[in-house]
Image 1 (cartoon, helix red, strand yellow):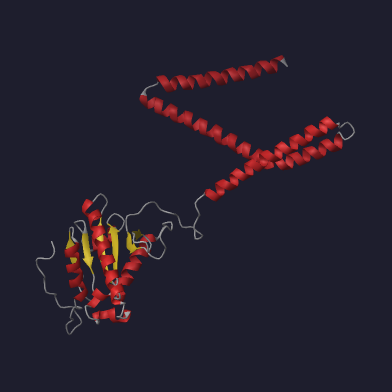
Image 2: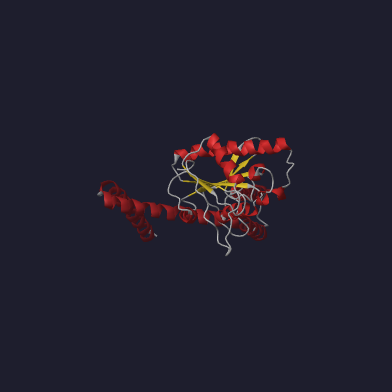
Length: 314
């Protein structure tokens, strides 16, 4: 017994010396060595804490079964010697064990409910994005939807770029709505100033359509058959960050920010504007793009070169 106590004491003393040495080295070692020692201390601490938490959670999970087995054994083995005091102690022990297990179960259930929902298809959520379609809400706000097929406030999942590009290309191809595509970049103050101008243009177009009573059918917008061309059609604005859509920025040769592309009816050449455009200029370019006619084609089906317009774009 004395030898066993001496061995335990030696083990405790050795552990204390090792911990003290780590602490001393962490304070007095050079910078590079201190970093490695600190990393080792952090790793050991995390291992001890995670192992302790694992053992504790396992013990709490097994607690109801252990208490049932212990109670059954005690009642069976000591049924003749059980007194009221022992029965009371046993009842209190069972109650406290069940209470502790209930608290543990409730905390785990609350943590599970607070966890963010996972996508049923296994798609991962992404962080903040800067691209999206500008939409006007019923309360007058302008919001940016990375995935136009989902309502405001929906988590942004992987694949949102494909959804945004698909919505944009479909709107351009159908020709039932006038589309404005704006390339921006992070840290561009003029890009941030351009968005409110486009938002006002969207609101102004929506108010004009509401005032006209939407008398022109949507089918009349295709090909610009209606009077005024696409000026009588809804306006959709897509903002693409060059860092999030580098392939499109390269395809269109975007070198300055903001750069806006104004689309008209299918087949018409979009108008390109580099730099910031104020409200008056936006309306002017929207009018020109909306009323532009599709390019004429030659006998072999090739497009004829369009006439150049000067003084509008930089």
